[in-house]
Length: 231
Image 1: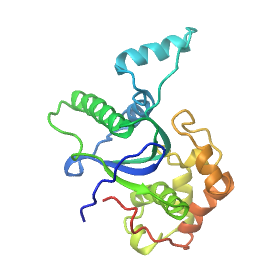
Image 2: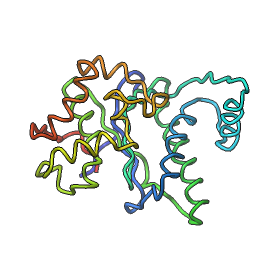
Image 3: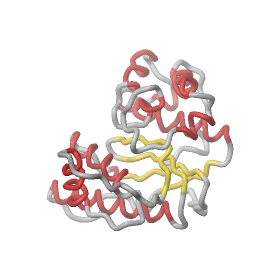
């Protein structure tokens, strides 16, 4: 089903999906995931960015140099999840055209890295990113659950339609799945510099409830994902 992209407005929340062309595997090893994490952070600025120079700058700071990390953010990343062939983001736009600029910079930068590393040519991502406007608190909760339960499909392919076959296994898997913001919402310091989590913690009733609403779904209290799925 084709989903019309909504108008992207400052201060509003959007669920975005960026998928590999033809379901290409966009993450082949841990270094790829780390590069994408680094890119989420570094490309979220109005300034032009060259990753090679940014890495040198970060290394200099580690070695005792001074940090000058003042950035004019394009978006606030509220949540994310990296899957082998696609990316989920929950984002608030801060500046006019900020989401489009951020996604263009991220997509172009990561594709350049990936194609160079794996000696491939052509597009890495499947056209433009897809987006759904999150309009209500109820929808926000469903999107939060949907994004953070996505990795269950890596161990239980039919989870969306039939629920999870082994709830405890799924819970343990999610809480240890590094390439997601879920650990940051359950008390771990996974990627705290990437996401702005205070808004969702407040909106969803506290850190404990952020964890419980996800685990409740896994335990069988299913919610309707219609309207939030971007496949």
